[in-house]
Length: 135
Image 1 (cartoon, rainbow, N blue to C red):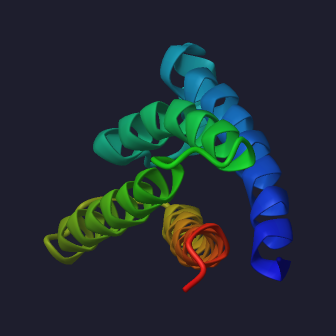
Image 2: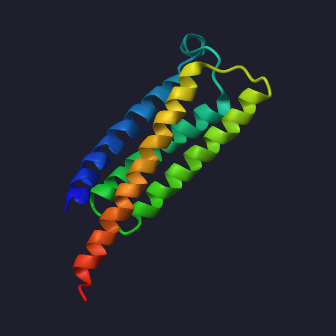
């Protein structure tokens, strides 16, 4: 029961996180040269990934809140894909690519958040399965 309550709060956080991600990514992508200049050394593939993932964050949050069966796999997909983008970003840095330190922080936060959501979602799914199929 506790993991289900935590999951509801994480679902709400995911939706808010997604909305903020879409707005900030949209501003960076479509806000013109002045908006881009404020951001410094953006890494286009990270920016596009985060922008598009923001829409999926909202969808995942709604699915988690509604306890859809596919919500946990979606959270796992978001965790794995974010970590993979982080790894590609790390390779980009090692090869001398220009970047902003805040991008490292943002990808760390996103990775940890979605790993936590995926773990809590899996735990909640197991608890629900046990209650609905008692032996």
